[in-house]
Image (cartoon, rainbow, N blue to C red; front, side):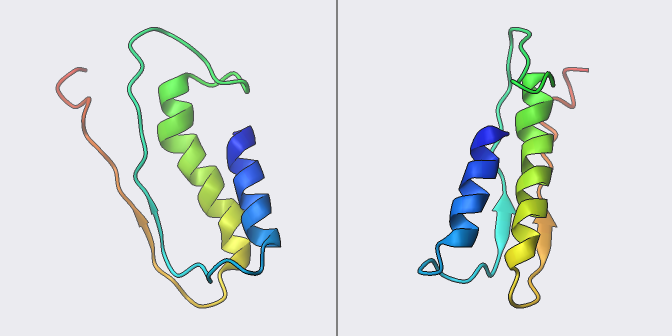
Length: 81
């Protein structure tokens, strides 16, 4: 989450970057060995869900024009449960 906060702070401060017109959160991973983030969340949940949520909320501050927010959910683990 630290890297997400750092990125959003740098993006907001740097006025030379283009205006945010869309945000597609599609990064993800699947961890086979149990692990947790620095904040104590299970890694897969932290990266695939909480990270996207945090980035979207931090960047909502800089929406200068109305833009759609699209959440892409992957059912990769559908057959694993």
